[in-house]
Length: 239
Image (cartoon, rainbow, N blue to C red; front, side, top):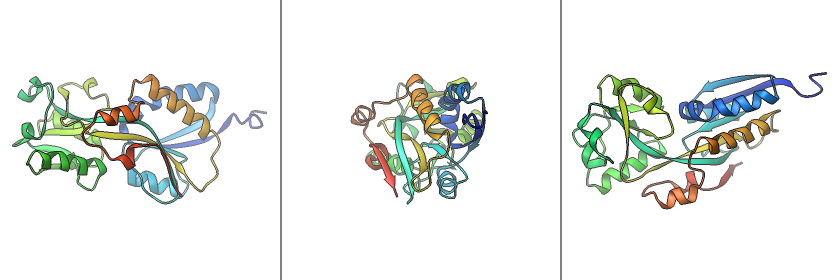
């Protein structure tokens, strides 16, 4: 009887760390209250891994802070979040209200590489200040910067969605000029929509709103100095 009511099944989610911490707990709580018999498999994946697994059907739905421009993949923008500076609470820069490229000159920088969408935007921010961004430790996922900053290995440029201040010894400050990253929901553009995907997608949208993330995306972008319009505006289908 439960199978006929579609109350059992499997839902496979791939996501980067920030939405796993800020969005998925509330979304999955709502989802599983309606579908207690559904097994959820959640994997932490980079954007490259996510796009590959969406394409081959190993993941039903993804959440990423990196733009995916891959044929046969559909993306929906959910929110925009600014880049922040993650630094030790003891750092002299922690006394500043905002931190720009000139402030970071001479610091050991932990950040995304230039191949990433946000990496190119950060390069542009430094170039506008007459500087070249020198990254001492290149990261793929922002969460990997946390233990490095805690250990005093440097200062990081990371997304502002992750709950950084929940961890001891670190603080965040806005990066100036304001630079945006986009949170996108990713599904296959060619395969039939798997069972329960529409339900969890609605729960994720509600969780984004309840988490207080930036859902008025165009307003956020109007206030930002650097962003990628192709990664930030609207719903796109690369099919």
